Structure formats: structure tokens, C-alpha cells
Image (cartoon, rainbow, N blue to C red; front, side, top):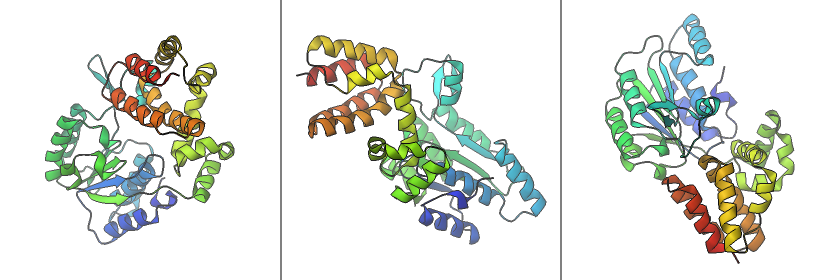
Length: 314
């Protein structure tokens, strides 16, 4: 069973959370703020275990821990961004399993916020309180964020935990109703320990991946797996900026045909680092940020990449 003891390199966050439990001063809502892959989700799971077993007898604790381990506890709702297809919502794992073509990144949607409201409308069934965890809370558009705000104002006997890269990435009105728990990038020693523990010690030999990950072992693993899924001939072409309009248009077509939009956005970090190492100039890096911005706004991906490559071809 996951506990806060398993969270590495985030002692301040652990101390704050355990102090809240020990003094029975649990906030109605928390914002776990920090980059992905450094322990926020693990801490949320550990916090849920310790919070939901607070003040109950050993037999009840055993049952709660077992159900949390099986991800089927009636008083815990774990929410993650979803895709919408034919009126149904799919998590990234479900979309991949169903073989859905994903043209836009997943989001926390208004339907999911309504589900949270319904979940919290009834009392806790087995644990002392209900708990809701919202991953990637920054993916909420204005409508679901405003709907969540109403829930945060009157959560009842429940606690909500929002996971986001920073306080600036979500609406200030949401931030004002959360206690912020900061999470920081890890030291090289802690990154090496986690990667080795998870069987990815070979990543430690790849300076490029480690440089891009910047103290996030989860991000290092994600980049490694991403690069493994990108066709190597395509990756080779992307490492060289097109030299004429025909090459630019052809590469944009090949890129968008081979990779889903979400993968394209994750690839941007790698390309930014590579172009910086190649040219030492910020121009292409800043233009790639523009690419990311337009992809997030659901602009037609092929057009976005055509514009980028044509603007940079020599």
C-alpha cells in the first residue's frame, strides 16, 4: 500500500500534510503544485491512505487500505483528463486501448465536475471523509473551473486535491480556495535512485534526456518512451531543419500523419533542446512555444507545423 514514506525528495510536502493530519486541521482543498513526474500523484495516493484511515480502528484501516490498493474505495474519486468521442469520455489509457485517434489533448471536462458534485452530495460510506483527486487540473477550461469553484466553496465533509504545474496555471479563484503544497524538482541523486529502482537506470547514460527532464524522473521516463515510439527516420529528419519549402511541407505532412497531437506536443521539449544545442539561438525555441500554444488551441496541426518549418527553413 502506498504511503507518504514512499515519496522521495519532497520532505516539506510530507511534513505539511502529516502535520495537518496529526493536528486534525485538514483543509477543504489542496493544490499540489509542481512539475509532472516528481511525486505529486504518489503523494496524493499516500495522503489519501493516511487521511482516510485517520481515527478508525485497525480492522477498518485494513479494509480501507485494501480497497484503496484495488482502486475501488467508495469514498475516493480519482479524476484525470479525458478525451471525448461519440458522447463518451475516455481516459488516455482507455482511448489507447480502444484505438481512438486523438486529435486534441485530454481535458478535465464539465461532465467530470458534475460527477464530482454528485459524488460529494452523499456522505462518506466507510472512511471518515470523502476525497477527490484531480490530476492535471490546469487542463480545465473556464466553464468546468467555475463549476468546480462552487464545489470548493461548500465541499462538505470532504477534501479535494488538485494537481497542477503551478498556481499560475489554474484560475486564481481556485487557487485562493486551496492550501498550496509545493513540490520541487529532485536532486541528481534522487533522480538516479528512482530511475534505478524502476528499472530505467540506462536513462542515466543519456545526457540529453536528463537535461530535458530537469530533475523529474517521471519526465525522463516519459521522454525515453516517447522517443522509442517515434519512427527513427522521422526523428532523424526533425533533427535537421528543412532547407526549402518543399521539404517543409513534406515534413509537416509526415509528422502529423505519424504522430497524434498529444505526442507532437510532448516532442516539442526534445526539439527545443536539440535546436538549442544545434544553433545556440532562442528563435526556434520561441517559435516552438508558439507551435505548442496553437496545438493546445486545436489549430489544425499540419498547418501549424507547415508555418513553423517554412518560417525556419534556410
